[in-house]
Structures are given as C-alpha cells and as structure tokens.
Length: 418
Figure 1 (tube, rainbow, N blue to C red):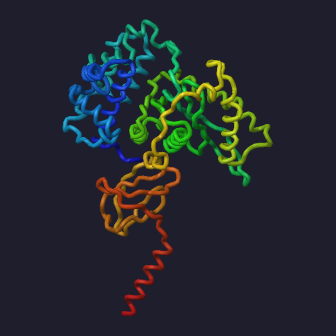
Figure 2 (figure 1 turned 180 degrees about the vertical axis):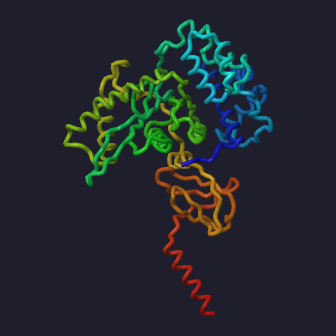
Figure 3 (figure 1 turned 90 degrees about the vertical axis):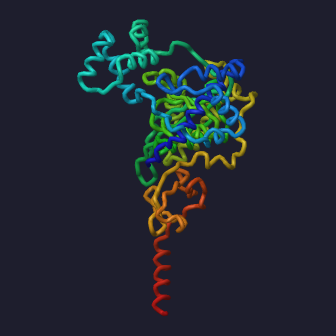
C-alpha cells in the first residue's frame, strides 16, 4: 500500500517539531528559554547542510506549539525557498559510509578521485569531508577506532516512559486447524528504564500498519512516551510514522546506520521471548493454531512471567520498577484512532467510487472527478473518512454491486413505463 508523498507544508511542520523537541531537551537541562532559542538559532536544521532560522521565528514556534500542540506549527505556510539547500541524501550517504568502511587504509582523496571518475555525481570533496566528519567517519575518527563494534557508553532513561524502543522479529510459524501455514512477525515495545513491555504482539506482516497498531495499544495501556527509538527499517522510517508521532507529541528517533548495537536492549528482549515464551509453546498443551491464540498466550506470559521476574540489570521486576512514577496519559483515549489513520489520495470516478485495498468504496457524488484524501484504519479499513480541501465529507461506504445493479434496473424500468 503506497501512501501519498509528504507535502512541503507537512515537511516543514515536521522540521519545526524537530526544533521544538531540541528546545525541550535543552529546557530539561535547566537552560532558560532565551538561551535555548539562541542555541537552536546558531545551528542549521535538520543537519549540517540544512538551513538556519531566526531566533524570533523559533520562539514563535515554541509558543504556537505550547498553545495548540502540533496543529499550532502545522498550519503556517511553507517558505518558497524551503529545501533548496544542497545536501547529501540518505542513500548517497549510506553508500559513502559503506565505501569508507571497506577501505579504511586508503586516503580519502584517492577514494574521492575514483568515485568522481566513475561518475558518482557527488558534491564537492570538501562537502563530503564535512559529511564524514559529522558522521564520525573522518580519518581522525577512524584512526581512533571509530569502526569498533559495540557502544561507547552505557545509558539508561531516567524514568519510565522517557524512552521506548521498538523492533520487529520473525515469529513462530503456525499451522491452522485446516492445515494452512501461517507466518508471523513479532512487534514488541520496551520501556528503557523499567524494561517493562508496554505492548507486544504477533502480526501477519511486519509493516508500518502493524507497528502503529502496536504503538497505539501500548499508549492506551501505559501512557505516552517522550521519545521512541527505532532502527532504520521501512516500517519506522516513513512520512506517516513521523506524522503520527508528531501529532502525539512523541519524539521519533532512529539509530544511525551501522549502529545496531545502540538498540541492544530490545534485541536482548526478543531473544528472551524466543528462548522462553516461544519454546514453551511446544510444551503447554500443544501448539496454537491462530494469531489470536498466539497473542492471548503471549499476553499471559508477559503479565504472569516476564513482568514479575527480577531483571538482572535493574535488580527489580519490570512491573515494580515501572509503577510509582507519574505517566503522561492520552487526554482523550476515545479520539486516538484518527491520529493513526493512514492517508491516501484518490481521484473520484464518474460513478462516485474509489478503489482502496483492492476494494471498491462509494463517496458523495458531489466529489466526482475531484482529488480527495482518504483517512482510514490500515488494518480494518473501517471507518474510511473522505476529505477534500481540508474538510471532512463523511464516510466512504463499501460498494454493494448487486444492490446498485438492482437499483439501476428499477430506475430503467420506471423510465420505460413513462
């Protein structure tokens, strides 16, 4: 399923949100707001090759966000010159880092000349050098042992819900009662401070829809995290995931390329699940036959075994370490669903229908031949909201071809009788 490309206005709003998150971090360190704004205005955004913003502009964003949340910084028009600065895109950056890693003894000037001769189309040599220095892959960092495996410093979030980590892993293969093979994907979220599992479940696919469903269930059960840490996988690194987290006030962080060790805690949790819970499936009354049965058993194991067992790193059980701290609850739980809706653009056909998920839906006939945006639950496809020019035009309905055929026949018969 392909989502619509991010609009310039939304991209700028997400950049503003990134600046706001940086200000929040500085404020937590005890700096006054004026100093925080000055620091933010002294650097380019989002990175070295980004753009600078005036202190007054950043301060305006801060107060807009404080009064209206993400909506307060999403409604301002984008500048005409936004995004015009020269930069190294993610794909090119990954290629450069990989090439440097494979040839640690070759001088950079030699490598750059070879890349240039092969027509890689890179920016200037000085720009690439600045990029490598920013990423820690310059000659001095490499000589100091930059490429050694493993983290340089251990870390732990100061309180529950300060930092969550999430990851996917292959789950057990099931065999249904009617002998069909079912492959599963485990999605699990870990609270860094307490090692508690806010939510985890097995899904049929390891995609963005499964990730966001897992996140929604975790928030409803354990409150909102301040930060969410993921790897560079496609389920996590996409425009829709960024929009959802921004609407919820969650700072979405991604591990740097070749830094998989930085999310080692959630990977160790996955190994624990595989070596404990998944192995017991063969012993406790026989194998399960459906994803529903699998998730019921998994929830029981989390609550009765994992959450009550003393963790070797903290000296406490996850449940005991998590409780007793204030959490940030979702203010209106009954209104959380629309924040997770996937958005897809469609052009309405002349018969007032659109296709979504290989299914036909009917929308108001007044929208025929117009471009609309559908907002919907990506798992259930119900409800499906119809939006046009920022206004909701009700819900799309599944098209009943047989009923429409009967109605058309009735209308034709009436006309003939006249």
